[in-house]
Image (cartoon, rainbow, N blue to C red):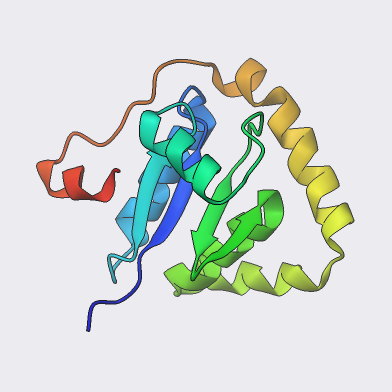
Amino acid sequence: MEQAKHIILFDGECNFCSFWVKYVIKRDAKNVFRFASLQSEKGRELLDQYQIDSSIESLVLIQHENVYFKSSGALHIVKALGGFSSIFYGLIVIPRFIRDFFYDMIASVRYKIFGKSACELPADPNYKDRFL
């Protein structure tokens, strides 16, 4: 039986977000993650399917029919990746409003610090099937 795929919706115009997509791909040994830009047709389709506000500009993780946003999504991603980075999942005990406060602070300056451009995806053809 094929393992369920987790879908990460990300800001396809954010260099910081593109960096994290590449980070996840390199560490996804179990090949469980799939990706779609929030700006893409598939991304908009998934937003509709899961009744997610289309004005969202943040990370969205769809995992086992559950939808996680912002810091919760990021923490569930590192947990699923396993390895050393999964230690950060322990931060889930911090109340979401506190975690999301810091997440939003970073998100509000991500374009200023990291820039904004069309998503630069890994050129490796082995990764093509990971994008929806």
